[in-house]
Length: 232
Image 1 (cartoon, rainbow, N blue to C red):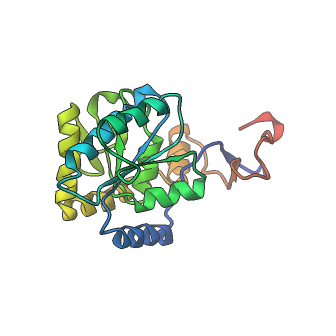
Image 2: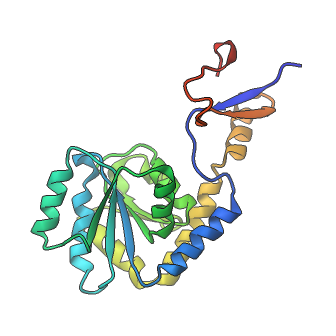
């Protein structure tokens, strides 16, 4: 019989791993004394300045508030200048630069909130990666795909303007029970997109049998190796 396979070209780091969920939860408990926010940097459209504005507006109320910015981009110098203009320092806003997948997981696990102030976004894989680690996101309703990846009031919060963005951060920091609930629900939401679920639902849409196996093209041994017979 012909072996049926589906190939993973990209992927999300969970697939229902309960041990990973427990690890994420324990990291948050250990970080109770640190209100850590996480944002990513690529270019001007990410509007990371909004995340810094939130820290500046709330740091007196939350003295342990700290923002970690992951990634690099041509707009980084502007962000650093904005940090200085706001009177913030490395203790308030840290630049992590490019991070490995392992380090990214640690950042996502230890963050209480993922900030996504982007002007425009696709579906928002970073939102789902954060959700998989029990970290809710705050994003803009008008930004596009994140209005679908963030379920407002369930897996995170959607806002409409700069002031609402800052207020949403404050709301979650003031209400640990709400923050925890959104984190748990975000993880449940992310698990809906596990590989097993995705493969089963895609097969149903195509009217095809569920594949016998999944070949992960993200593994070093297979990266750059085309699927057999030129298929996918």
